[in-house]
Image (cartoon, rainbow, N blue to C red; front, side, top):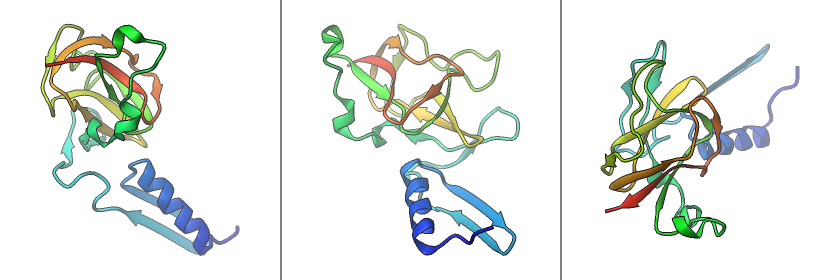
Length: 160
């Protein structure tokens, strides 16, 4: 097996940071790489357990998505006034903390800034996604159990 060179290691670190991955470990015959980023998520956000077997959560603010990515799509003129809460990471979207549990939010609910609106699972970590705007949930765009991309809209909210 080939050893990882310094350039490959730099690329790996950049990839992990861009995708909000806090911990990574690779073990080969004569090489062991373990990376752990203490500040993988904003400092004000602390890790907390979720009611989900063998998983930890790290709340992630949807505000981490660049403002340019928050613009409404041009083919949806009726929704231009609506704010889109977007996924700050790549993973699998879940509407509730565990199978059979009620959804964090539903259409018509009022959300506050910092309120948990869903979970995005990435590499067996359950990341609580928080609303970055206060208002009324007008539409739920993502479907539970489906993969989501970085910056993909999850909800449409009519801001207060």
